[in-house]
Image (cartoon, rainbow, N blue to C red; front, side, top):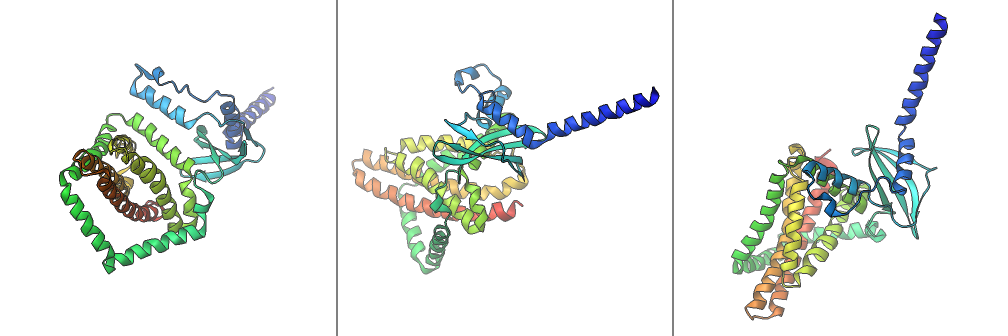
Length: 348
């Protein structure tokens, strides 16, 4: 009887260990999570009225779930029989081939310590067009950057800065106000994150998830040149043109409001309260340089407003707005090269 009891104990222990191994299998966990996600069991109710009266911790939990488990796209079909497992700094990622209508891509499940942290649908290549990832595009960007650098010593850029100083001197107070307001909102967001660290971490996860979905990191496969070009392309098209320059046409105010919200949210999500200082110090130059590009175009929109109100004509203000777009582009080029070098070498 004693021998039988011993064998029973070891058999139970073996079965328990097998059960734990199966439960910890990332592929099995990922499959279950995808099925629950597609069934609508993981997505959150996006009704903001549900947040009324909630504590900051409850809001943070809602925010994490809402952006970690967004609703799957219409008609999503996932092939759960062909998983790919990859260990990344963000955790274990399990990728399943998937299609949504005519678009191919993958569903990516991120796990940490046996817990599902995020599920995301990623179209092939993210949101970056295929031509952006071509060698010709990145080499053209590198050549344009070198040409700009040569002009810096040849005097072309010096003349540009001379014209910029003249414009900024003419509207010194307005330029100072724009910098003080937008950088101030960034600093305010960073300071407030110390009092709401859980909410700040949730916002940081949202920002990180958005970057993954965009697919900017795909440029890293082509080294510093590829990553710098991908960063510049996204910041220029979606940051400078679509959400700064075009709104600035409407007499500057929409661009000011958009960037005010952008700077506050970025300051809150990227605060030293949730980002280690060893990382924050290296990333701070990126923030200062790239955010200055949006400040310049926002300032250009406000100049357009001033010129129009003073009766000097819309065209005169429009010329100055176009000039700030050129200056902002130069700042984004410099910021993209530094950020690519930072991500690939300084933060390793």
